Length: 85
Image 1 (tube, rainbow, N blue to C red):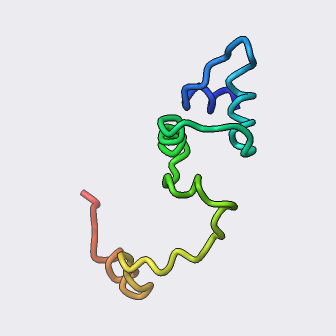
Image 2 (image 1 turned 120 degrees about the vertical axis):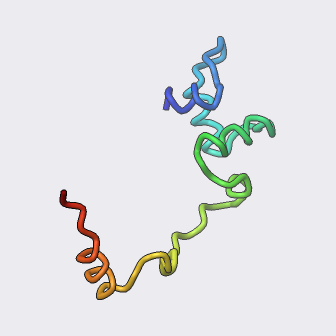
């Protein structure tokens, strides 16, 4: 947690450590300024809207990746590329 609080920009103060303040904010206690919220979204790699949700969104299937070839075509393509000198 100390590493996360440093990345977000919460420093230790007389009132307490940055890690403790971050834990308090993550628990939903206290007010978060918009600049701090934007920084948290950037550091945590989450969309800003996710911080306004009452609970985390459910994990879902990401769908099919259409950039890959079907299995039979992958075997043909792998055999066609010969990089030996």
